[in-house]
Amino acid sequence: MIEREAAVRAVEDQLERDYQQWRAAGADALRMAVVDVEEHELVWIVSWTSERFVRTRNPEFMLGGNGPYLVDRVDGGLHRVGVVSAVTGEWEADYRARIRGLPVRTAVDDLHDALCEVTAARGRVHAVRTLRRRLPMFSPAEAIEYVSALLDGAAPARLVAVATEALVEPLNPVLAVETVLGGAETRAGHRPEGRRESQSVCRSRAPVPSRSTNTLPATAQEGAAWGSKRRPGSPRPEPGRVRPAPSGETTAGEPGQRSARGPRTARRRSLSWLSLPGTAV
Image (cartoon, rainbow, N blue to C red; front, top):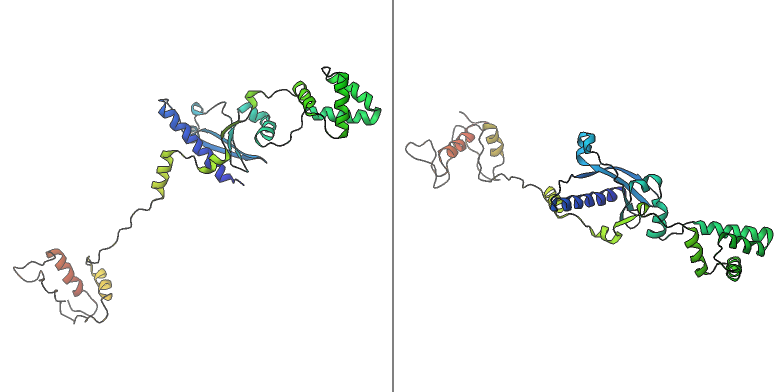
């Protein structure tokens, strides 16, 4: 089953594709946004309008005549209907019959019920007469064949097709459901290239700066904490003494000499040891 979030994502991807196509054609396109989702037993009905109207509520940017998208709740297929079909609900019969392949009651079903009722009340002859009054294009032989087969279980398919053409009005194309993407295509993830890149950028984590092991503490507090993390077994400096510099280095306190690490670093290093607990300054 397709959940609400997946339906919204499918429509947002389609709106982004449309926006990119309009921009590629050189049109002054507006970005669109989903504004409402309604649950139906067959589909998710997803309404949309311009993103600028959502932000500003300025009627100048409000769309008119844009019907909603329909996202199938079983296979995720993406469809759309006009605003008239959405308001009147005429799309549902077309969706059930043509998209889902479900049985839909028509005028032919009403005719069959009437013929069975007349047969039960007045007999088969009156049922044949009723059929010919409703469908005069049938000959007496065809009408008898139709009623007899119907009462036995199922009317002949060729005669039912004639009855359907005569009794069932063809669907107005304005009210029909338009398929945008099939369920397999939607599940395959037809995402706009630009949006895929932006999502990957958003999901990437920024590098976390790491503290260099050679960085020395700059304050007395840091020096105390740094000194407490000395290697196991290393001698603790005696009170009143400055930690000697490693071999090959000199401290900044020796006149006329510069530390291999630079005077500022060496001075910070020596001062940090002076401020350790128990030392005399």
